[in-house]
Amino acid sequence: MTKLLINLTDLLRQRTVEGERIEYKTGWSPDATLRTVCAFANDFENLGGGYVVIGQDCDANGQPLFPPVGLADNQLDKIQRELLAHCQLIQPPYFPVLSIEEVEGRKLIVLWAPGGQNRPYKAPEAVTAKKKTWHHYIRRYSSTVEAKGDTELELLRLAAKVPFDDRYNQSARLDELSKPLMQAFLQEVDSALAADAPGFSVEALARQMNVAGGPVESPWPKNVGLLFFNETPERFFPGVQIDVVWFPEGAGGDRFEEKIFKGPLARMTREALSYIQRNYLRETVIKHRDRAEATRVWNFPYAAIEEAVVNAVYHRSYEEREPIEVRISHDELVVVSFPGPDRSIRLEDLQAGRAVSRRYRNRRIGEFLKELDLTEGRSTGIPKILKVMAANGSPTPLFESDDDRLSFVIRLPSHPLAMGGITPIDQATGEVTGEVTGEVGRLLRVLDREMPRQQIQDALALKHEDHFRNAYLKPALALGVIEMTQPDKPRSSNQRYRLTAFGQRWLEMHPGNSAG
View 1 (cartoon, rainbow, N blue to C red):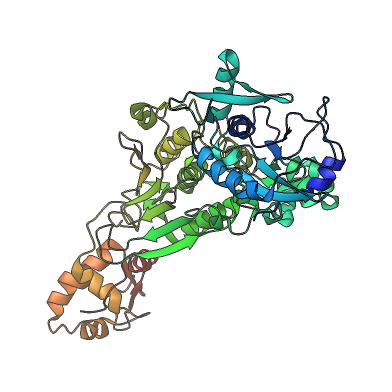
View 2 (view 1 turned 45 degrees about the horizontal axis):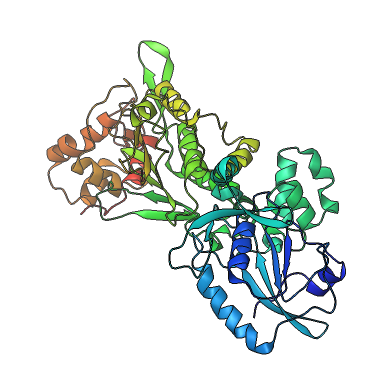
């Protein structure tokens, strides 16, 4: 049997008067009990729900009497069976925590009904009626009343204003919030609370940061707190991770490399971005004969990737088990998240960078990301991606979803002039000179440090020098993927050939067999 997290005897001995959070019932009354459970589940005043104590009588002023009237042993099982059946009639189904307590030798049934995560709830007016009528119920002081008119509309609006990230997580304990993580956050954002934080308990600090709440006797962490301030949030939210997948042969190829990032939301995001920046971003410097200034382009500009990934972290649903996925190939970098943008956003406005959301899926997550300078939270992410891609000279990014808004896809095309992108560049002229052929690719894979012509030719098992020069050596030199050690003496007997930085990058992007 589940035990209460409060000491009921102490609570009653404090002569707690019936009110918005506790109701005493002398005996088992299915209709009245179910309506009160429904009212506590709706938690209209955000007080953390309440308690129904069955078997406890009270005086005219609502104060408990001692010893309580109690319940006979043969009533306990009957009440539990009926309660289980009746709670299934609540819409959506809601089940309070039930505990059998003993006070002064008398048995009581205590129902603990925390504020529900799926409010508003409705309960039947009479559970035994053949034709049932459902109503919304709330607590008004010490009474359970039907929510009508403006009150009912307010209850409905209140439910719409409790996003998932701001809800209590009743499957987690408060001590699963990490105080060191909370303190580190406060220090990073230069909060005035940081100086006082060491003297706070976990609960006090979590309440100050609004990542926990609920009644004093049983505080709950909020989902946003577990996402940012727990070392393993995926235990509570399966799918909270970022998968970075590299396709060296393109998305249709047989090979791929995957790295998975987990952990507190901010750390996970930063580590994934840092990994992408270190391993997959390439700057190409193109020199021009007619001017001193070189052209510098990135295959994918980092600022655009940062906006795309943070956008996915901000706006994805943490109730879904699908991870954020970053798919990288030579041609494009794709960020996929679930679900798609809110239906209030038109896809044509999204593509044009004019999208402004009327409803945010994760307002609390957005608040923390803004504090960490990872987002502005003003619907500026998409326009910034468009601006950064244009400044880099990249093709226009694409923003895709489907009619059902099941997913959201951001496609960042590679810059066509960037090494590791679609085509190679002649360093001397800055012109696209052609693709790396199979012959050139084979040459690059056998080239080891500095090698003379004959040694390279032998490594490729080629007998004819003219064929080697025309099909392998000259195209590789023209593409700028290899270079001479003595470029001013091209026919020197001491001439050697070696990879250029472009050639090395091409090999990193195109791993494969050697001479084959």
